[in-house]
Figure 1 (spheres, one colour):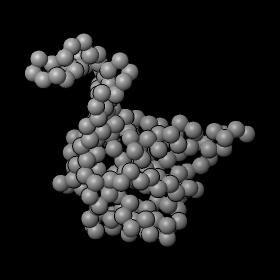
Figure 2 (cartoon, helix red, strand yellow):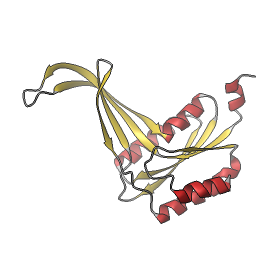
Figure 3 (cartoon, rainbow, N blue to C red):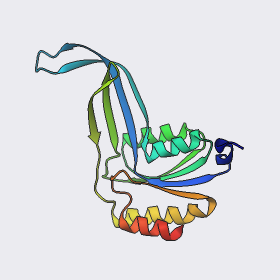
Figure 4 (cartoon, one colour):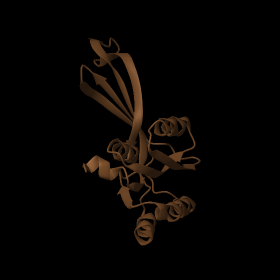
Amino acid sequence: MSLTDQLSHVEVLCVGDVMLDRFVTGAVKRISPESPVPVLSVSQNAAVPGGAGNVARNIAALGGRCTLIGVVGDDGIADELKLSLQAVAQVRAELVRVPGRSTTEKVRFVAQGQHMLRADIESGQPIDRPTEQQVLERIQALLPGHDVLVLSDYAKGLLTDKVLAGAIEAA
């Protein structure tokens, strides 16, 4: 039995910092007359789940099933991230929305296969106590139906000491 066959029977609970990875791709053919910077002529704009969302996608790609717990803002990027996660078979997203918080988005500008620039829209602040409690309640409710717990930290504020301790205790 191959590793991917074995993973098809595994239920993974992934708790971590989710984000939307956006790739703005095009070609540079000139320098801006306003200042000496390249002008990107955009040909494609693609977005995929990143951070812990990418971990969940990789688990699914290997044949496992993954429930993903993450924190997002109450914004359009959160909606886009949720839709992109729903498109991934074998991933179930349990996203906690936090009003006033920005959903992490990393925008990469790429020309001729080279990254020119990355722009980050994010809040690295630790989540507040009520959000910690919501995350811990989801972990405690969902963990019994899973075989593995993965903690995925990208330093965006979800895995506070309280969440880490609660997840470890629940496991």
